[in-house]
Amino acid sequence: MTSPLPLSVVYITLNAERLLLRSLMSVQRIAGEILIVDAGSADATVDIGKQVGARIIERPWSGFGAQRQFSVESARHDWVLVMDADEVLRDSAALSITHLLQNPQGNVAFRLRRRSFLQNRPVRFGDWNHDWVLRFMDRRQGHYNSVAVHESWQTTGPVGRIKGTSIDHYSYENYLALVEKMHSYAALSALQIHHRGKKVRHYMPMTHALAAFLRSYAWRLGFLDGVNGAAIAWTTALGAFMKYAVALELQEQAAKDRER
Image 1 (spheres, helix red, strand yellow):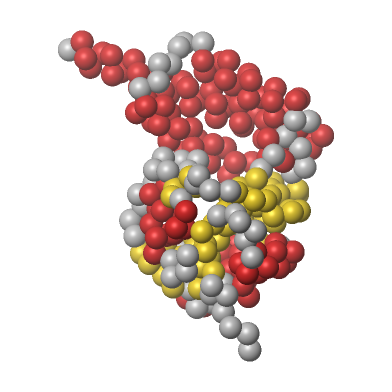
Image 2 (image 1 turned 135 degrees about the vertical axis):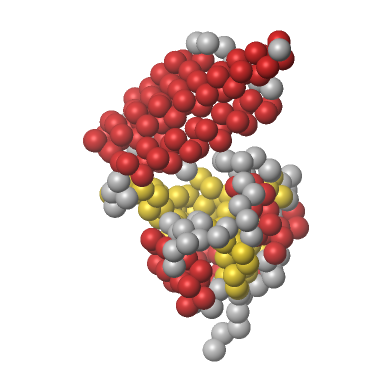
C-alpha cells in the first residue's frame, strides 16, 4: 500500500450533490486528505463527502474569495489542489500532479486547463475554451483575494502550467441553469463595481454587452459550437449588460441618498 501524498484537495460546497461523488472519486487516489467546507447544504452533499472519507467543516457562506481562503488555510498539507464539485480531474493530470509534488520545478503554483461542458457536450470555442485556472499551489506562497465572485489566487512566485486538458467542467445541465448562474454572478459583480467606486456611464451596459458577444461568438469562434456557442455568447452578453446596468442603478441611488 502506497503512502498518502502530501496533498490536500479542497472543496467549497453548497447543495452540490449532482456531480460531487464523481468529482471526489477522480481525486481520491492522489489526495492525502479531502477537505469539504460546506455552507449549510440541504441536500446529500455532506453525506456524499463522508462516504469517501472526506473531512467536513461547516461554515456559513462568506463569499467565494473568503470561503476559498478559509478552505486553503484549513488544509493539513501545504500543497493544495482546489476543486469545484462539478469538476472531474483527468487521470493524466492526476499523474502530472503526483510527479510535480516530488519536483515542482521551481514553481509555487500551477495552472490547469479546463474543458467545459454544456448539456454534456464539450465546448470547444468561444470564451469557455480559453480557460486556464490556477488551482494547484503551495499555500505558503500566496492567498486568495477577497472578492465575492471570480476570486483568484494571488502569488508573486513562478507559476507553471500542466500540459494538456486537466479538468472536465460539467457546469450547466441546461440553458436555464446557465441563465440562473448568470443572474447571480451579474448581481455580485455589480456590487463589486459599486463598492470599488468605479464611475459607470450610461452607455456602458450596452457597449460591454456588445463587446462580450462579439468576443465570444465571433472573435473566439463561438459560432462553431452551434446552438451552445450562441447560448453562451448571448448569456455572456446579457450578464455584462446586467452587471453594468445594476451598477449604474446602485450609483444613481447612492447619489439620490446623498442629496437627501
